[in-house]
Length: 113
Image (cartoon, rainbow, N blue to C red; front, side, top):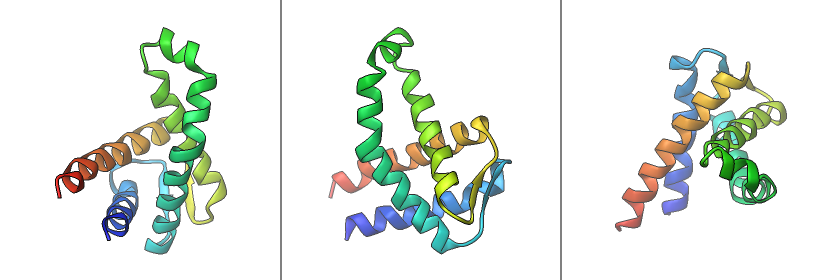
């Protein structure tokens, strides 16, 4: 039940992104659910592999390169999901930061239960 609640909250966050981040467009709540699922899977499976390969760059930049990886994954989801578009790197960076912040807050809230 917690997983479904987190998924819906992230989808609602993604659905709200176009309101305050220019360059991100989304067509429907169903598309937002699909984007949330793809972004979650990529962050779980692909992101650790990329960060492992790019460990020297991450070390040199004191971990800031992980934000770049997260933004590129978010931007990449826009390429795969029809009805979700990210116009460039800066909107992808802002969108991924917002989604990550909401996910972190939910993790803290739901882990206390």
